[in-house]
Length: 296
Length: 139
Image (cartoon, rainbow over all chains, first blue to last red):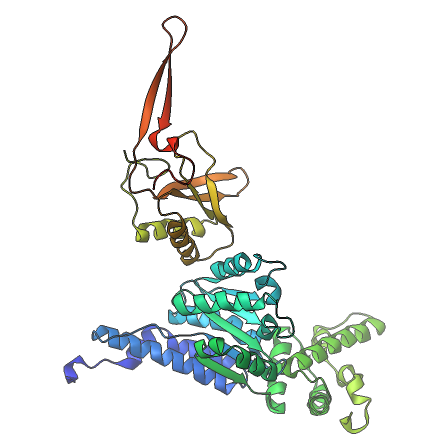
């Protein structure tokens, strides 16, 4: 190809505001490297597509339907919320709103109820992202007259024919999504991006806790920081550990205890410092520390 | 005779791109868009059949356009109109309504004169198409 026609991809990318977008993503989302890598790829495709279009080469809108799988609390819903805005800024979504639904919003209760219901949801989501949380509930193999399959069929049709209008993201726990996709190969093959959300490392959980607290104008005393490190270590080894969600719950309870402690000790004015600080005692009162060695 | 009713009655029929632009305008103002069809186009017939339910909470015109395509496919030889309803307090009524589909042949309206008592004349209009039963009027 002629060098005179060469295009500066960096300039194109800056023009689309991509570097700022990717920086923001890196800053706001802790860990989740597979997710970030995929968003970077999609963004790169956008830039390359634009470059190709200026040269008159063929460019087609890519299929952007996604499946998010991962353990509880790994950020599937949070990322989906952001994904709508990201795709909007990348120019793949016209409006960039997110419609979050579950089985109840798609599947009707009697014959002939499902199709209008599903179509209505799809119409609302057009121009944006349709997020189906816990998508495996759509398919109930134990009941052969279940209307979930009807909803899946309509969904497939729209995913295939109106790819420019709508991006569908299905999300759920890994093992159950795998069985769901096995039973519905049509759905699996129409989803271009299967993204697995890894569990967070202790260091990442600590960082997430820091972000949550600073967002609420709280801070940890040095002792509390050490307590939190220990808390995360113990909590991770206990059953029903839900990654970031467990951390958020722990912090919420710590805030309750902090409030209670300040309230019980009311003797004169409270300093802003005291209102903002969570002490080690607030965390150490958790039942997680009651178990010896943290092993359940 | 080409039937004209509603907002853009003095214009030629809107193209799909123009309809889409109108719908975007409606949605941007928070109006709910709905579709209606009929084969009884008498000007006094304000009760057309609803095609599906009014579409509330839409963000993008694509949903309306898909519905419109489905309506045209189901009733290719009917009149269809697109309405936009404004639910804001004080308005609570249609803000926009225009024809988006029409039969291939439109025979038009007959003006009938009736002699009354004395020299009184009574007038009435009737669509030539409505002589036939509903559903078979524009075949």
